Image 1 (tube, rainbow, N blue to C red):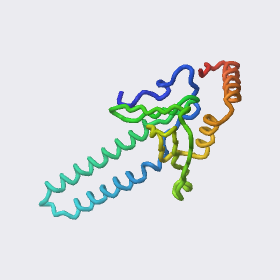
Image 2: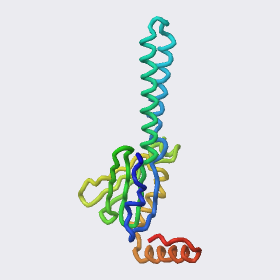
Image 3: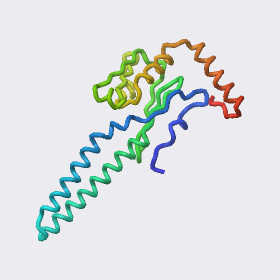
Image 4: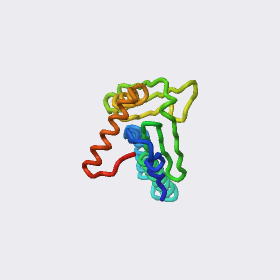
Length: 186
């Protein structure tokens, strides 16, 4: 009810899904630290106050509840956000109450760059910068992307690779799935 539609529902029948991911869990690290620190402050201040200030203690516990609810919302928002790459476009769905769908055609991509900080190398995430023909697109910078090398290689193959080989590979995959009795993708 509150989650956005599955990103696959936005795809056309002629598209084949290549990648479907959510951003790396490291995107939640700062929010986790912030929520934990605020909760610790609320609990410590509440226990250090004299019992006669029960109104202030109650307010602190309500603040702690608000911190927990906000953190839960951040986690739900991360959980429902999805990035889908097809052979024709990038599609990202975000939002818990209001769904936002970002889209960029693969044909517009002129340059790809990925960056990894020291933390990104240790934890397994990076930033992908997708440049298009002189325009700023909705998905020009994707932070906290898991396994950016694989993503980079796959997108490079889609954008700059041999289209005939891709079509043959896709037909082979469809034939193998049909032989196994699975529903064809496209």
